[in-house]
Length: 151
Image (cartoon, rainbow, N blue to C red; front, side, top):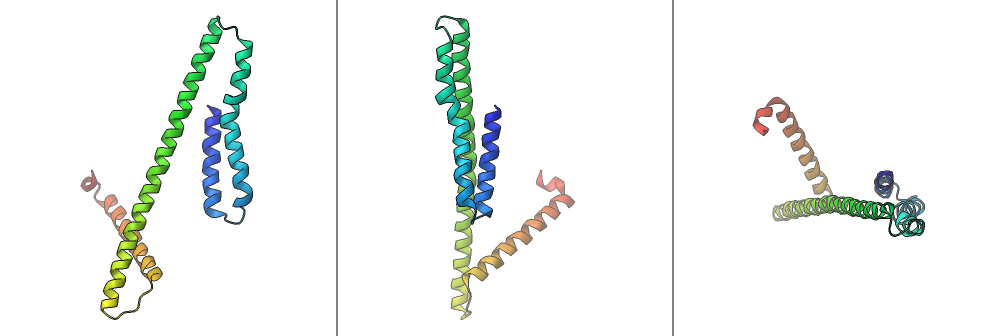
């Protein structure tokens, strides 16, 4: 169980390093990936076969050991699938957001072109993102003033 917590922490750290430090990620990412694989794979490839050697096949300890291996493997698979589902949901929402922003920017650009206004798509994107931030702030303030509306 401690290994899973360590894996999650390493992966979160890896994501942050990848996002923020583009210059040093060539050094840190391979080390963190190797550590993650070492913590996850090494126990199942080395410890479990070695432990099989020490148990007699007819004892109850061996049966309990096999049950615990299956339980931990299924728990590990469950956690990995859950983490992958959360990551996939996050990525899909990012793609949807980018599609919406692209659509709005293209619509604004075409409307400005019809009115003979020169506009840069990056500037329009920044304006749209600032607009979304202001709207979200206003909604949050309204939720604080009138919480019964949003229940």
